[in-house]
Length: 127
Image 1 (cartoon, rainbow, N blue to C red):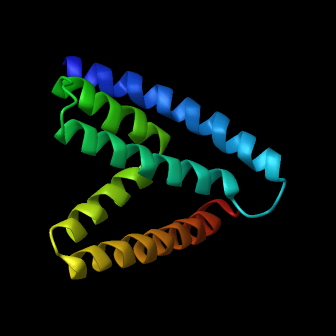
Image 2 (cartoon, rainbow, N blue to C red):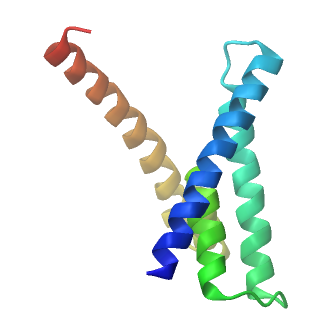
């Protein structure tokens, strides 16, 4: 139960942090390109790389707190960090084909799902 509470608290914090940082970056650049999302995704990937390496090294931290930071905070901040980590883990194991497949499937199917969902909602709700 404590793990769920820590994930929920971390997720809330990460979501607020994403909202503030992405919004600030977008306002700062003022462009049509989603710089805020890009910054959040890249920072999330950097953070999960640092944390996972630290947790597998000499940094001693309870598993509950590792989960709170990686799944909670970073999961709320950006699930892209998990995608980045899982792809890295595949490459690190020498599974380049699975890593490439992970990238292609996530990007292509994710985009297709957004497109299909949007078109369905247009038909259903007349958007």
